[in-house]
Length: 329
Image (cartoon, rainbow, N blue to C red; front, side, top):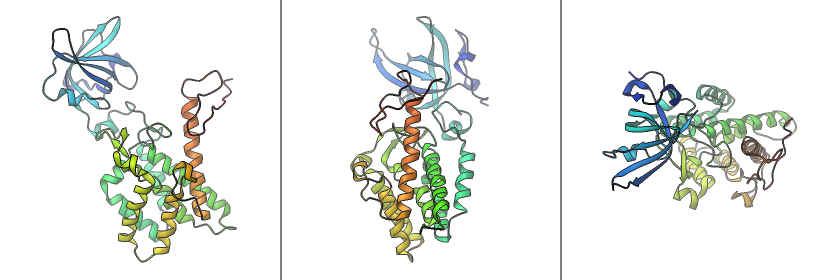
């Protein structure tokens, strides 16, 4: 039985990694090369989530090249810890791709991930669903019945490089948007004609099209690149068309509700230059769009603040086309 996972630092030079050692590694880079002897070998950069080292496979056979491709989290079956040029190195003999269940339980921290556990995020999701009207709850119930969609929605990042670019990022972002929008509704619902249930529902599902927009690593749900559909059609269109089909199945008797919901989805980027097919034309759509922009922008700035800075200034944040200041005192 595999024990709780080990770290690279647990192994001294010359240690042998056996199947039950519990060593899991994220393959950050993997390149097949030909040595001076004409033999194929694999050169890798791997990390256990804390330390990063070079890795090698000298005997390339079977499916080891596919197992150790970039982006995979793997469980080491056989390896030896060595030293090369005064740095630790892992020479891998055999490995298997870690399952999603292992990544969620044993491998916590090996991938960039939300600060919130799935259980914490799921509770927030369920609390919001309780606020929905009958139509909204039927939509969410139908959505969660699609196990694959729910799994991806609750595990993938919200973006590849701009915001919430980590595991469970899409779920965290969707919840943030819904919670911000809910507070705005409660601020204004006594004075303005806002539909709180519609706003919360649309906030939770506004980015569902990202599931189709990304080419994902099937085990880790990490974004490898944008899919062809993502590049040609975009997540707003794909999300709206997928949601429309679901609405027609679940509540076809309420076309007005579906129209206003789809308008929010189609307008949530706010401006044409930001890829929005429509500008928000209802108060509900304005609330969702502004909440989405606030959460995405703050996270993008936070990425800059936590990256290399020039004294008190971030590098230029692509989403805002400017650098941001942070007092370091």
